[in-house]
Length: 73
Image (cartoon, rainbow, N blue to C red; front, top):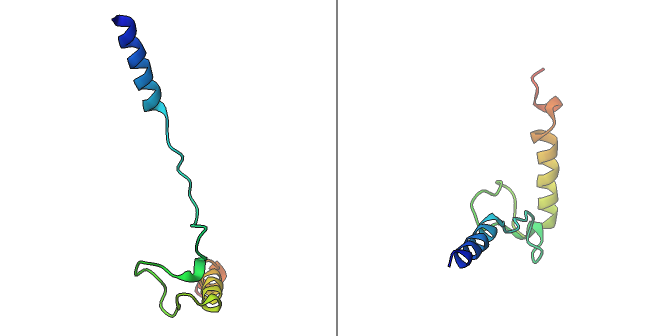
């Protein structure tokens, strides 16, 4: 009886210690510029337009991440 209890306990501990994979990444069935279901899209961006998507990425890289353009003169 104790042996059965210990086997069950060991099985429970082993399953409790396992972790499911938490993969981060984009969905592979849709392109990035296809659109977003939420309202957090940048103003001026048209969903599904690849050129406007690339323009938004360029402007973010230039104005949002470039400290030389953000710093006061």
